[in-house]
Image 1 (spheres, helix red, strand yellow):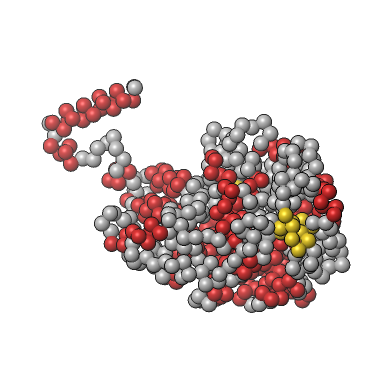
Image 2 (cartoon, helix red, strand yellow):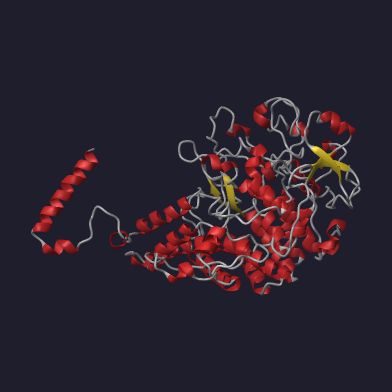
Length: 592
């Protein structure tokens, strides 16, 4: 009431002043924020860009700085769930039907924008409003450039995501009004749009500050983060163009390698490594505060009373990790399970872990580690468990419980929807993998390149080095049409970045969508398993490759026989309401 009273008195005084001063009528109202009065100080620019970060918190609408969408929607709108689109995870929760439909090729043209899809254009408008006004501020050009760079990073990143899903996009570089011709224009061709994306990302990676002075708190993205975004986007475009025959690949791969190298060689970040190979890989993925972590470049923080999620409470929605993923972990001699004499087989879940890359046991729950992780609120039950088994506890569709990000302490004693588990958006480990892949695709990779990338990741977990002179040839990948070194780098990427939101996009850019036609399977199904998992409602089937029986996640469901139509499934469909509103926007091939 006091504020309202003071504003009323002020308004009355202004009216009286206006009566004796005609010039007052030309002045902007001082109790309202307008473009004419707002853009003055650096703080004005910073506050405006804060609003861009705030808009982007809605991850299912603007899926770039992926974290965990606030509140209830975090059960699907989070970075951990994105792997459900791929062959890494196998959800059956009805609330996650969207992921199952994409994964199985059973997705139809939506009437309106769907999760992670053709929406978020208000974000672009907000960015372009800022870009039209930053130069009005009474500060140096260097200060202006920091905020211009921040906005252009967001715009380039946003459009890169849209191009990856839809191909051609309506690229807009100015604030639109209801009369703007661009509202009814055709989509910008992919190659042209991506050149604009590259211009935005180049500007951002040159003009953002190395450090915003936030002590690696979850504040603003710095120049090193922009370099990683650029490397990620360029790697995607380079490999997509190469394997889909869509255009230039060399330039994009060179830009990816250059950006990753600059971050690796001159940036302040280092792999998190305390010399404990049995825990260092997942240790920092399972804590609540990542401030000061040597590897994490950008992360989302959640705090009770400020912004929360419930990703831990709904961990079971992910279904579980797949047999396909588990089989990709190397044995401790550095060889794949198809070649290593150390492989003990998967007759039991315990034997699956024997003599394997330590990252497997730090990603998938070993039965002996149930107490260590206080699994499912330390309920004392014997894990693993399959859907349908009697009693409570966490159930999976595959038998492979995921513990890479699991943190029981974020649930014990906390009320519903008050979780604080953070999300890692950008970390150095990804840059190492990008550099290795880009140089391998360019045909320039050396042993020195492997030693500063793949082998550093392996050193953290005590695994043997990958040697360019002795690359194993896994028979499971000889039909992929790639060299053994590229196959091994792709494997390393899958293992290291599991459940960090990359696998589906990787399969698309590599033109490996047919891998999604391989039925999702879980643990070995034999007499011992029938006793161990008594009461489960999950069905089983014979693996056509090994001839052995395994849990068949989608047997008896609408998704039992997945399909991938290479003529249409590499791009998503444009929503029907968009097509109705603008006849110049045409549907993507195969979705007509």
